[in-house]
Image 1: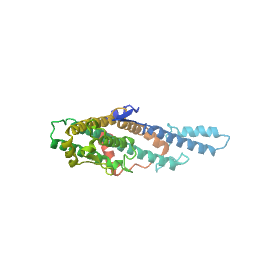
Image 2: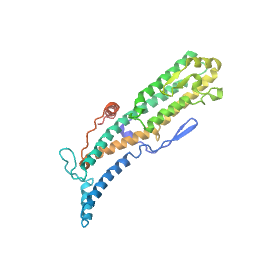
Image 3: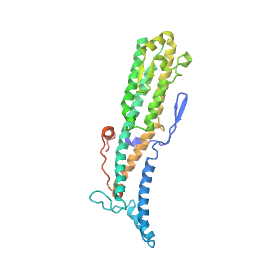
Image 4: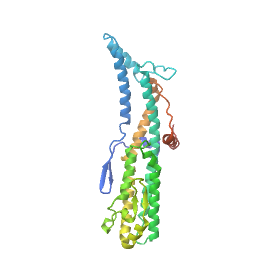
Amino acid sequence: MSINEIRGANSDFSLLKSTGKSASAPAEGADFLSTLKLLLADSKTQSIVTLASTASPFNADQSIASLTELLGASATPALSAIGRNTALFDPESAYRMMTSINAKEVTYKAELAEINDMKSSLATMQQEALKLGSIDSTTGKSDIQGRLQAFANAYNGWINRFNDELQAGGLLAGTQAATVSQWELEQSVENIFNGAKDGVRGMSALGLTIDPVTNLASLDTTRLNAIMASNPAGVTSSIQEFSANFAKSAELLNSPGNFIPNRMANLARAIDYIGDNKQSLQAEFGLGDVAQPTGQVARALAKYQASFGLT
């Protein structure tokens, strides 16, 4: 997906439906721009009010008008040698705010790159699940075991890929699009209704379970062999239902109007806004410190630049 396609994505959220349940996607991150604009407006207002309060009551209106013009978007006051706008009442606070904006621009780009990777990984998991759908009554026991283990390996690859980012302090920590994606796929694996009509209580009855601490999948082949011997039809039914339901969950997470596309669209709009207005913002509030990303953010930022051909 190109950055222009992301920018043009629909920003309305719809219901994410999974087997037996539905979850609505709230407008997470939809206020990136409104929050930033409110912060900028509030900074201007406070500077104006503070300066006006020190002015003579006889020329307060004239002072406010002059200050408004000075602090307006069209104003381009000269910055000091250390990048401060000394025309402001509190140049240091304005400079710190611009430092924060510089950092957010980098963080938004890094997160967009990671969410884009998650989008691709979800599509891969969807295909891995669909492969299980070809299992039928003619499939041999060793083949069934091999395919289930291959799925477990792919699932663990997905978990390991994003585990650090989802932990506290990680790039995707608290990002609903990412945490919901992980939760939805885990719930699909643990759904006890797959195969219920044939007397099977989900994939756990076949030995495929999720560790509650590591979130990794494992396959108990002893349990799988036992149920394949006692209820082969139930095994086939469970796997086929699981295949369809898991693939559908992954597809919905990536579908237009849902978690992943909306988060990407919101991030892209915020990046665009900062990029389009950065020079004027710096002219008003000072240059701010240049962001110095490290670790996860630095790696993801490099990926953003490589993936979208932008800086």
